Structures are given as C-alpha cells and as structure tokens.
Image (cartoon, rainbow, N blue to C red):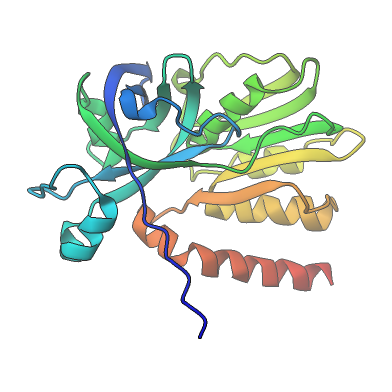
Length: 281
C-alpha cells in the first residue's frame, strides 16, 4: 500500500518592525528585523515576496506561534488573513528585510496597518518566494508595471548587469509618487502619470507604441490583471516574443481584494491562455 504524501506544514517567521518611512505620499517603507530573520533564505530573486499574516480583530494565538496548529484547531474565521508584498531589499548582514506598501487612506487591510506601524511591533510572515531575476545574457530588458510592481522593478534595476540595456515603464498616479531608482545598467525609465484614470490606461498605449530594440527581451510585466492581459497579448501574439523565461502575471485586479483575486486568479489565467492560444493559431 502506497502511503499518502506528507503535507508540508506552513511555517511563519516572526519579526519586529525596525523603521517606518513614508517614501512618497502613497508609499510606506517598512524594515523588519529580529533573530528569526537571521539566515532567512532570501536574496536569490528580485521579485521575492512575503505573505504577511494579519490576525482578525480580537483573535489571539498561543505561543510559540504555529500556523499549522492554528488552522487545525481554530475556526476558519479566526485564522490570520494574508497579504502579499514584494521584498524591496534584503540585508543579510543585518538580517533586515524591507517592503514598500502602497496606501490608499483607510482602504484595505495592509495599507492602514502600514500607516500606523510602529518600531517594535510584531510582524509574522510566510516566505519569501520568488522566481525572477534579470538574465545577464538577455539582449535587453523590458520592465512594465504599476505601483504594485514598483518595488520589484526597483529591485530588478539594481541587479542589472553593468551596462545592461533596459527599458522600464512605470505607471503611477502623479509626479509626487516618483522615486529615485538606481541601477548599474543602461536604463531608459519612463514614469507615466494616470491621474484618476484606470490603472494600466497609460501603460498599454505606451508599450504598444514603443519601438522594440533588436534582439529578444527578458520581460517583467506585473500589476493590475486587465492591462497585464492586454500587454501579454501584445508581447506574445503580436510581437512574437518567446514565452519561456518571461515573468508576466497580474498582481491584483480592480474590484477584487487579495482573497477574491487569489481564488479566481488561476481560472482567469487559464482563460487568457486559451484565448491567446486560439488567436495565435
């Protein structure tokens, strides 16, 4: 008789807020530290992300904190809620991990928390995970995204090979949200200010009208799911860019919180692939 595979228990890391900084009017930078971050398996990829755990109001958990035990012994409405954020920077020497959080006033879960976070506050998270880093052998790099993808784009630009050619398109609400981004590469960075328009409304025409350099790009394309879908079609179908090795997906979707988006993301992606495979055929 074949034994059923053992299900891996989720493991959470406990850290503490070290510093909180408002980088732009709508972007808050938080640095975590603590003994459990020492030796954290981070830094391999430039799109690494963590899943921060937020306890429901009034919920308390026994120590030591064990997510698997919580899920086995407590009702689902007492489980922590997760929110996903890109690792902006990992400092192994000081065991410090930095994230940037987009805020919209009292809207959402993580944004209001980030605006109120204080040094010393406990933070629990899972991860990091990740899959992308700029390929030093690529002919050139194309990085496209909205605010949600800005931390990963910034981290990726910092990790380009010296002199590597890159074109980056970043859509934000207004000029006050621009950041100074450093890179050893040869980078053409274009900030797009959409105002109150729908996310992606400027990215799609900007990338569509862009004259691609010769050679094959290594693509990083993330953000609101609808514009990612439209640009995915442009890149794969109209421009004929090979799919292997590219990093393209929707981080979020208008009208969906993260829970609803994650529950429907696989079906959304599969429908896009079927649609675009039919178009290619």
